[in-house]
Image (cartoon, rainbow, N blue to C red):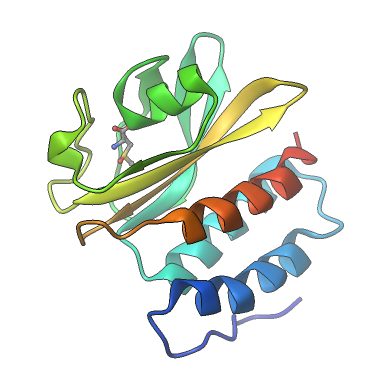
Length: 160
Ligand code: SME
């Protein structure tokens, strides 16, 4: 197994994903343990995208429960419909928030977070978890992130 990720010295997200995603896919290839796969994915995204927080919440009964992540400590449980994560779960779609202060009900785990993207993981039409990435910059996520992370989540969905 590789010990370090090889990452381009650029802020260009498309180039970051181009380098990063294949390396994450190799890392989780052949690993059937869910937590191990999510943990290395969170670490890869955190390091490769230079963000404040990258991690997963997993659906357990009627809540999202904090899963593997990298970054500051975070709230552990989120109800369906609550915050960006709970809305992504309820609507079964990716949500990009340019300015968290403009999102009604946003859950501020860290006051340093200014924008975020939440991407659901879907198995047999059911949301089984969400990937959440937070940035200290406003408007830090776009369709480039959405497309790359939805593709990545399709790979991760096979681990559930
Ligand atoms: N901001 C999220 C909560 C999770 S933390 O950002 C890690 C939300 O509103 O759902």
